Image 1 (cartoon, rainbow, N blue to C red):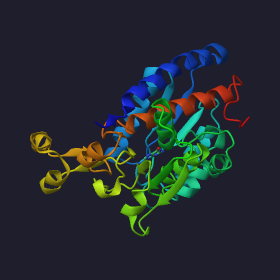
Image 2: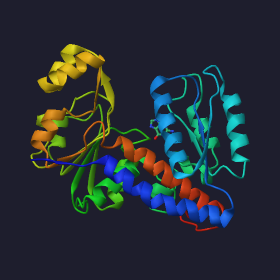
Image 3: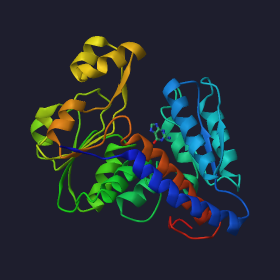
Length: 311
Ligand code: GUN
């Protein structure tokens, strides 16, 4: 039987650790940590993510606000919003929800966020701190995966880790964090030759490609630990029949869609030794780590601790 790596459980642990940290900041600084989320336009998936981010902040006593400029805002308009958030002392963290509309220069926007308020860890300065192993905010999804692997005592040192996907948000920082844990890391992408064979070398396989259930049994070494970062919604019944156990199909027919990761769920459970389910695996960790980054930024900015090493 493969072990389920329960992201909700680890999220709850991280949240429980965060509560006294928030109280210490309030006692020390006379204010709660503050998070500003910028959500451009009305992408339904982004709206759901942002709502759960601010809800978790509320739950922990972190002040949060969501700024919702229209999709038609231009780069200059968004830069002005970022500048005003950079200048507000009670805002410790700024998160610009991605993806931004195509007409906006995302690189320029991410560069404009003050590095000490960059709770996503996407600013090039913070990417450099990660790359050189210096303290600093780490991108939330890969940092959450490291927390999960540590807390389930999955050995990383010396392990062959294969990361599928090379995005700035997940793939690249994931590879860097695994490298810092002394794993032997391979990063695969759409041009990788013989992808299944490369993946079968993995003791730890991280799939972050955004292709529903693309990773099937032939990619998974028996006994590997599989981390599934994908979250796609399957709406075609034929696809649902390929992906899900027949017992899930009545649920599909009722809802008209089901959530699936990048890894075929049945194959993952059958071949791996441990895996993150979708939903309930990686998803909850991202938000927990965002809270942690916001708290660490507040600790550093209020002079309580300087965990981030940026002050
Ligand atoms: N869109 C998908 N994941 C993320 C994330 O971790 N941070 C931000 N800002 N946008 C995202």
